[in-house]
Length: 354
Image (cartoon, rainbow, N blue to C red; front, side):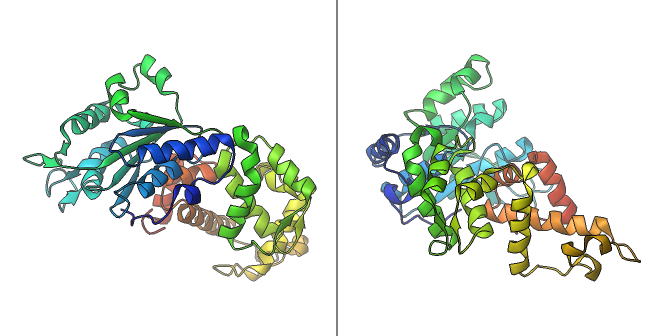
């Protein structure tokens, strides 16, 4: 559960383009009501920011805002996550647990990636929305809930309904007020404003600047990952080129996928890494990349230990940036969610502790 959000639609939905201005208008129109809202749009476009803005502009803003990623929770745990359970109701239920619906009572419940919800859970969710009450697993009676429901998906819900992967009656319950969030490529004029916003957040606002050619290159990019991709590129560029005026060529380096880095970016990555304090010392004979021919030395190195240390640190940082959302962390690491979960188990990383 997250604390109440002291923010406004302007602070959460950055941009002056007609598309984003229209989204803010819709947010203000629906916020005072209790209508269920569904937010659609491509992955990374900022659908949760719309949900947060609706909550912030509503009379429920002083109450709880609770977010659940329906695609990141294993299906056998999703019912307990949403509705809670009683002690002893199943193996491992050693304590009573309130579900997210109860936690959001009086506030807002955001159901992200609702299009990934299993069909059996869709039936149970529909019943909760109709009866405005939940029943914990192993419980003996309904518990009344008063939570504003906002859902989101990047999937084509109409196609999913046609393929019978998503219930049409549930869709109509969720989509009383639909809001579509455009891709970043559809509102390119917002890119400079978003860049300044992310630079302020990264703490490099005063030390990083863009030439006009570099800014033009950023605006012209297609941004397949949308606002999330832009945020990651800005953070990467701010680290690589802090204290510099970033050129168009350096923008190209920052935009390249990790597997296609050129020698210039690798040099910049190494220079940036030498300014940082490593979280754990590596063996002395791998301390200098400049002495590549002497890396192994006479005694050799434990390559598995070095790779495991690097993997552990990247996973931990990805989970921290994603605020424990496994699906988002997996996307930032270019991993399948199930693969990341296995690696988290391998290193003993609980998402709540990340």
